[in-house]
Amino acid sequence: MRSPGRRRLAAMMTLAIAAASLSGVAASSPAATKKKPERVMVSVADFYFGPNAVTVKKGGSVKWVWAAANTEPHDVHLKKGPAALKNKSRFSTTTTAVTDAHFQRTFEVPGTYKFICTVHPSEMKMTVTVKK
Ligand SMILES: [Cu+2]
Image (tube, rainbow, N blue to C red; front, side):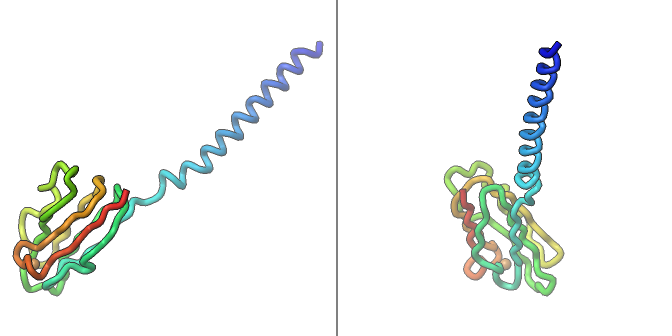
């Protein structure tokens, strides 16, 4: 009987093709899923944000870190964000700190974000640009 053998061969080939396409998926997906989200560090210092302009892709984060050498209190306050941004208050700290503080936010809405320190609004300004 030849046909069962042929059928088995056909089934094995189908499995081989399926395995090949599965391994193709497995080979390409880790690169896409394991990629670390972007995070940019900004120093909150006497009396500047360093750097004072950063760009992240949608889904990226900014982490503000208060400088150890600070002698004055500072905060991070969103003065103006994209119109589509819903929870604007989430992008401002609720207190000031001199040192030993950090503040991190993830940016899901593309656009321009203008931040100030409310203690030193004329000196401490910065921009976060979120690209699509
Ligand atoms: Cu300040």
